Length: 303
Image (spheres, one colour):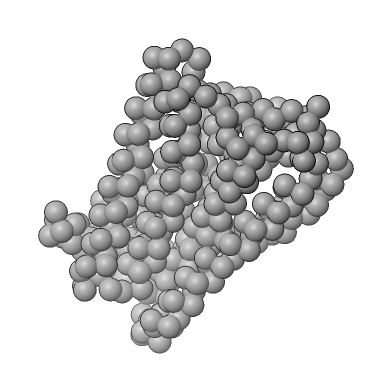
């Protein structure tokens, strides 16, 4: 039996029991982590150094790259270190910090993707008002609001999760600390507070989702009315990378937190966790650079 006052560490899920497979897991995660660092680092440097990319769209892209770097750095290194050292332990304080950081960065990223949908809507549906609606001050305020909302959401969830008594062991069925798996260790009915917070978060999530969908309905209607094929191609080139990133982020996250309990299993939870936590930060730079000529030219010039 454990309780929150005597609990000083958690045991994370390991990918493999044999030393060879542990080293393979370390190598694979190291490769993905370095690829994410390089790709996002190049985008950040290119946007910061190329004055032609000092526009609202690339300002938000720079913020997205920073979030991807931060989110993958809050999950992967500890798992790699555990595989390398053949251990499962993570301290109580480190687990709380990891939960806060993951919730902070993922919540902020979702808010930022919503802001980016608005930026695309204004650019295509209201181009004459773009300079007014998306001025420097307005962009900074929207980005700051996204970061602040993510911080507040993470603070509330983390404080509530670790205020609940934990007495059902210290083993987490995940390779990083995640709120649902910590709550499984609770022996108190106060988890209902977390349910209340989840309902509020779900309402905000649904509101952002509806806003993104409605924005793209208006965008595609405007694009299809364009007489010029070159104009349609340019508009799709601006929107499809963002739409691909949103789809990847939402599909993996929704499947993780909304799948029925009958589909839950340690192996499936592990695969889905990798898909929504490890894959997007490494893939997002590729999605944004494939169809974006300005960004490609800036990266070639930088390299």
